[in-house]
Every structure is written in C-alpha cells, then in structure tokens.
Length: 254
Image 1 (tube, rainbow, N blue to C red):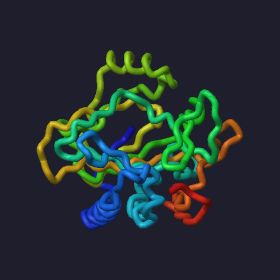
Image 2 (image 1 turned 180 degrees about the horizontal axis):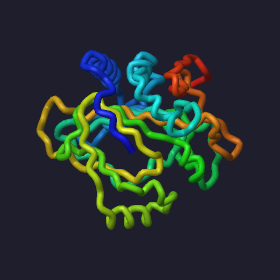
Image 3 (image 1 turned 135 degrees about the vertical axis):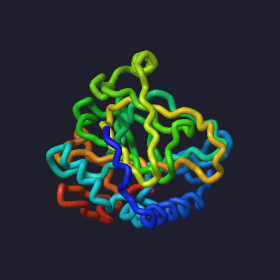
Image 4 (image 1 turned 60 degrees about the vertical axis):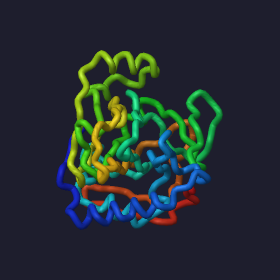
C-alpha cells in the first residue's frame, strides 16, 4: 500500500466535500443505498457515483490515479465506489476483514453469492480476481490515530482468502499498523489487505472522517463464473496517460 498526501488542493477538496454533503442531505431510511449507525447517523452510502457523476469527476480527476495502471501493467476499469463516514460521537467500528465482494451484472444463487446492495448483485470472487483489484481511499477529512483511522496488517495480502474465523485469529496475533492521513490524501492498497477501524475517541465536531472508497480492476480481469462487471451508468478507465470518463455506459444501479 502507499499513501499520497497531496492529491488535491484546498479548492478541489472543498468541492468534493460540498458534493458529498449534498448527497448526505438527501439521506432517507427508505433508500436502501444509505446505511445508518445505531446513533442514527450515516455510516455508508452505496453506489456513490450513480448519485453524482460530478462527484466522480471531482474525485478521480487527479493524475495520482495513474498509479493504478502502473501497478497492474495495463489500463484499469472503475468497478465500485462507496462513501464511508464516522461522525463525531459515533461508536461504530469495523472488525478485521478483506473487501471480498465485487459488483456483478446478475445474481447467481450459489456459495459465492452475497447480498444485493441497492439493486446491485455482489459475490465473492476467486483469489486470482482479487489479486487484480486495487482499492483507493480518498480522505475527505483528516484521519487521526485516535479518530478511528484505518488499521492494516502489513503483508496480509499474501494470506489468500482465509475463512472469517481464521482471518480474525491471524489478524489479532499480528502487529497492526495505524494509517493516519491528512485530508486530501489517497491511500492505495491491495484488495486482499486485511484491515479494520476502531471507535473514534475524538470530540471534534467538524471531523466526520469521510472517506470515498474506490475500487479498480485490471482491464483484462473478468469476474468469473460467466459473469460481467456491473454496468454502472457513470464509469471510467484509467491509463498511464490519465482518466477517461464514460457516462450512460449501461443500465446502472440506483
């Protein structure tokens, strides 16, 4: 994994946060794309860029995303975006896990099937597919060590995909690394990297710990089982020359 600390300037970051706050203001418990904490605040928004192609362009425009195809050795395709939030006073935590779900074009009812998230089928791919996916976390707010920032287990991307109980036992016996980061930074990491986050101990009313979690797959990578990637309406391809945005590509998710 690698952290790039200066991906956005102040005006770019302000525009991103303004667009995110606009999306948050439309939150409703009747909308399955919004997930809420026990305290009633938003902690996640699924299918993020289907709500705003403007936000997609604001987030993904910087040249820093050329890191992704450079690592893959080929162009990369956008495959999923989620907003994650940890507001002041929230006791929400996320235990040790891998981001093992991918968005596919149809549901197959078998042992790899996951839930349908706001209209989009998800499933667990093979290790080979996971090795061709990269996560990019755009930090809209400062991520403090005592504010529930990301924790990772260095080298855990080499563990494969152990069962949940075995993964947690192994993670709890390994030394974790906290990943504090400034606002406007981007954390790039292997999709199999084991990670978690703790409760925020800060009382800063202005820090909502917003993170835009993006995922890209190598262009030649297929999800397997005869499936295709979910056809988002707003999507993009990144090459070592930069980002190419495409809109109204397919039927898309709500």
